[in-house]
Length: 261
Image (cartoon, rainbow, N blue to C red; front, side, top):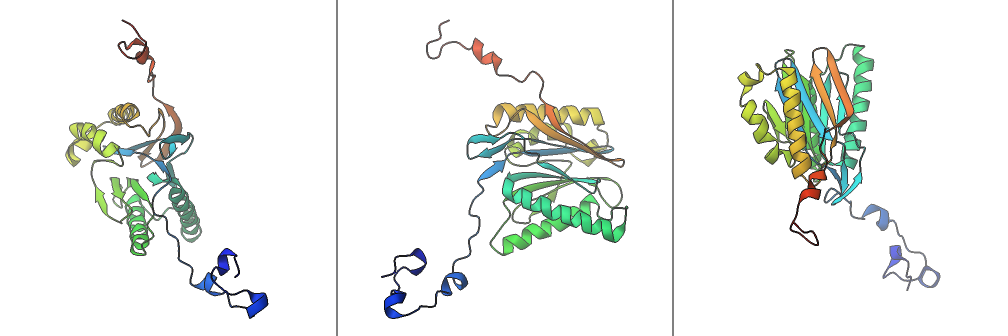
């Protein structure tokens, strides 16, 4: 017998003649990602009266290992919108390349004036995610899209790997949906409240949520990216650091192990 893996169970060619092995290429099973491997955690966003603030930490975890500490999960699009990615990092990179190609195509066809608002981009990405889900090959991501809609009003919406979409004055993915969302909704329960929220208040609220996530989400870290989207464009910073967020207080804990009071 021929013991090569591609010919298991087949007679040897030198004894029984050549065998057509094309079935290996034509009928081999098509492999789809069954679960995300390297992942990013929460993305949070909130509207305020002049725009939207979005933030995400820079950690990509390999399972429970904090493996990559400089992964930017906020991507700008045409200088007018921001896409925040949680979930699988490889699928995020695929979508990022796809959006880069789309931005180039739009730039060639429409000149310097961007045609796609954040609302248009959200619909496009939602249909893309739904298309991949319909092929049973989903992109393992949960996206937040922030920017301005067709009427130049603040826009914030989400799309998940099933192509489901929803919008709210404040949104969070991952663990942030349980920890950060209640904090933001306490301050901004509806659209009317968002229209009275100042930029400085929105930024402080986002920082408070990132602090809570750093302490409570085991897949997060204290370095994060933050983007502010207004009519003037996107102001994004990638190396923000939570102030005074060390675990030094643990040295004062007594009563465990060899520590004595």
